[in-house]
Length: 229
DNA sequence: GCGACAG
DNA sequence: ATCTTGTCGC
Image (cartoon, rainbow, N blue to C red; front, side, top):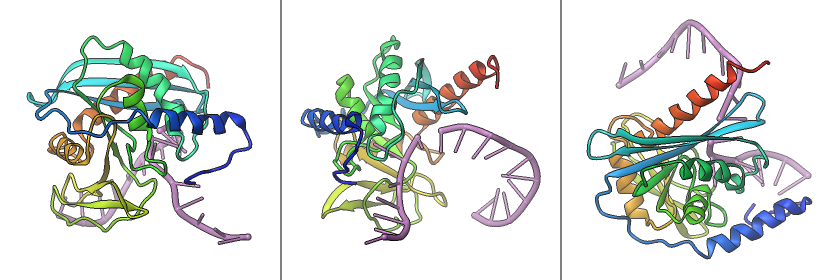
């Protein structure tokens, strides 16, 4: 999967575009104490034909109170292919981002950043496409190997692939499964870990992502109740 | 050849 | 991602 071959030229072209965008990726420390932190996520209808992308900007220094939010809807135009998730989700997320009135300082994305076979997961892709700092925080592994982190909150272990540290497996909550954290754009691993942990004081999933998740699910449900099926 | 495989 | 109720455990 590191360099998959596709019969469909659409997918080979996606690989090329991924490579071009990856050249623009910048790994550097995040601003020290971001206040405006956003979460980004998507939700699909039951047929997998339409989906919603949303951003929620919240105040990380005031209990994650919501400052701004935006949702966009789109018809699905790319299938789910492991390693090419960005081509499915970035377009609708970019449209939602344009609708925001408040620019977040950093965005947590429900996907991987550099923890990707070609070091350019959806969170990194979104960051480069929009020119904004992003952090990848996924619920499960795409690639790489790791040791189970210690049971205490805050414990983490590196996610390794080909002798490289792609990200970290972080315990955000004692007794719960760890999350997979990796840098997106204009971010490094230390910054990503610190932000993800700070944004998840109580639940496994960082609060900004939880808020984005509920936003897009609500958008889908109110649209779904008005459609046949 | 056989699994694995973000959302 | 989505289809779905109750249920077990800290």
